[in-house]
Image (cartoon, rainbow, N blue to C red; front, side, top):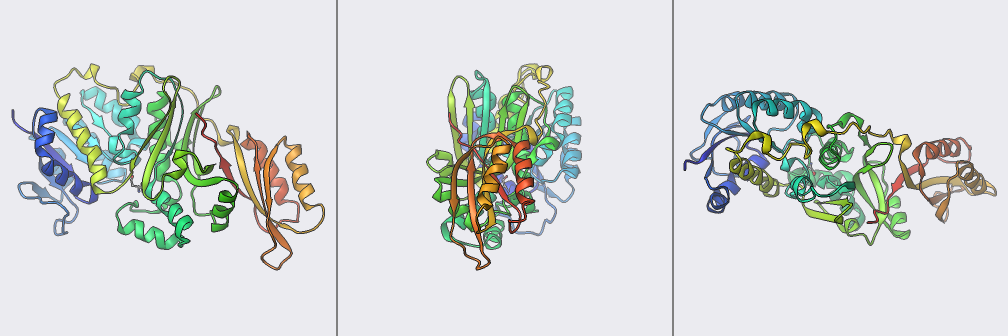
Length: 437
Ligand code: HSE
């Protein structure tokens, strides 16, 4: 049988990796898919740039619309990133009756509902395994492998750059900016690295995971997002002293009132497996009612790990080219007419435990004021650390761990503590999660 002809939009890190993996493993891929998969046409912004792959035999163009309009191609792989032109190209490819494979998490998180509706109308597939956690096949695991479960919650380290920065800061005492520059050199970071460090990239991925776990529409605009740029080396050290690691987690949880959808720095007990996921590696912990906790671990970024997911999607698409569109695995795991309208909870309604760090004046009654405010809000203290004065200004760092409480009550407590007049600067707050099975 003839090879399936594929068009590739973008020949950068992931595009180059995809061409390399398809060519190196061509024989294995043909044995799996039943047909060869051939990149016939590709677009790149700058054709004079050196490539990490051999492009011999591929027609190259600077105009991506030439690729999506090429009638010879059956599948378009979108690897240019961004949301404006990528959306236009993907919708055009679908309108032209082509299947789409994409690694674009921003595109799926923000425009996935529209794109999947268009794909359903045309009977084509849109596959996006590479959009979440790079090479880890977590979309397939949740959508298919865990299909017998009611998923209760999931928590993931889903941004390699952020995890790399936190790990290097903890292990080597390196500066934030220095580690970020290295991550950019290695091709892990987004074009705009604030997407990595402020949690936007993780929120894109979490939005997708929550939709396939709970069968809800994609609702990126309702995700709570907080980055890692305010974490100090002292926080990392205090967390360790208390038996915790700080990780930048995306958490989605089903509650009776709605779905929690939140990305923020989180203290987790240091003995948990996920607390020991270091460097650029990603991991997603998924709790199903039947299976219990499951952990998926692997490289979340980089040329070939991401290409691994892109090529797996290509194999899936090729295997199901001739199947009845009504009987394919639904894009969001649940049948489109069976999606739930459970609301996304506002952060004030989320219940979690907390780490608080404040710089308090070292004189009688200051701690008593703080603990009274916490008691007034019904907040119970789990542990407390007071360190020796360091600044010579008569103030001391105080660290408090609390039991679980609604965020709204914690907000009120922090507002009142900051108004005491005995604090030097704002209270640093991080959430604490025990992630028990
Ligand atoms: N910037 C992303 C990360 C790349 O660091 O994880 C993979 O999505």
